[in-house]
Image (cartoon, rainbow over all chains, first blue to last red; front, top):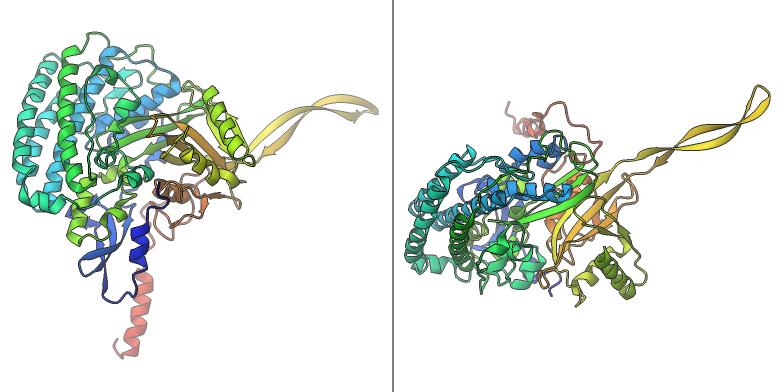
Length: 383
Length: 211
């Protein structure tokens, strides 16, 4: 196993005089940084020899705010972490609290959680691919194809939770509301149409000459470094590590579904791109099974207090496989109504640990593609 | 708990000088933890990663916790003289328990699919003995997270390759996640270099003979 993994960095830093080097500040207001994020890039010609990410432009100390409010009070705020995937953030937080307090979740709620989480994965991955193609220069069209599909899923979220993006849907011990009449059928329709979009997208893009030229062999993240740098989600799996928390932790009812974990071979941008496509196909399989199997029954354990909720002293770390990677919550309770310590494990931030290694030796235009292939949301990076 | 005790015994057999302690979790999650002395943290982490039976190769989460100084009261019986005769009375004596900062690590094994293993390391106090060895040389994944703990809690990670503030700006004083941090009255105030720049510019223009 590599120790620092930074051999390329050391080589570049030792590379002699600074003459002819150019320091470029990419961001914070740059369309390709997907938010307010800055990279201090040192270039030799067009080649990147050093890259330092600069964080904090969106920092509002989410964790401190959560320590000053009740357990339930933080639930809507978890929507604002990764605003593309509010439902998975909800689930991770609810799971951590359920571990902390030892709560059980009714079966129908578990199915609704799986369904909403996989729908979230579909729309996140579709849009990530659209954004990445936009970064490659395919202005608008592929992204709008993805957004067309996302609209259908957001409509489902709206009729289920009342909100399209800030869903605030999960509660400790279940979900806030049952699916309205006809929702399961509507979801079945959206999921049934989805493979057609995937086929179309794949036919248009998977063997597209420009996509292949710009992404294959670009931003390679080696397997050992991916594990050592705590990469998670599609970034980790594209590097050839078959690690999916849905399989290892078997949280919720994921052990009831038959799905595979796609794994990349090269760990480059193309693998990360294609892996998301394959993951969406697996998500469609999970969704079809879940929408078929979903039982009737309550969606929340009625005995769980929502207000004046005071779990006994202790601590818990709960994590799930979010679309961007491992999203986890670490909570310490001192027996009062607000957590003593509340910590978010942000996959977007931690996946950026190895950003410099992925970019060194690449051209400056590739930095944009590499960043797009990691898939970050700044609301979660800076918290 | 038994599994954690066996891991503890295994590490202590390999590293006899490193003393580990079990910290029980009273909550429902059953996630107990191992407390490591700061001096041996890096060796223990390396051992956990490289031991072929354990293979905790994935450092998922690093975070800090601030434990304030506590005042505990003990009831003691003391002899006192009262109106010429000696009697025994009960008095409460206040005892100050010093606080500390704690760094918590959640380790998983990608190779074996096991975890979480919770490691904790504590600083000497909250003011001047706040250094903890960095794990960034064992797990690259600690790099940004340790910077965050340094920024928000003020734990100094010795041996970290690039220990700077992560989220707050350079020149910010204080550590916002500490429990005794006092929030500013005016959030809008930000130190800007305008004054300095204006002063510098006026000096330069004066030299050139311009207004």
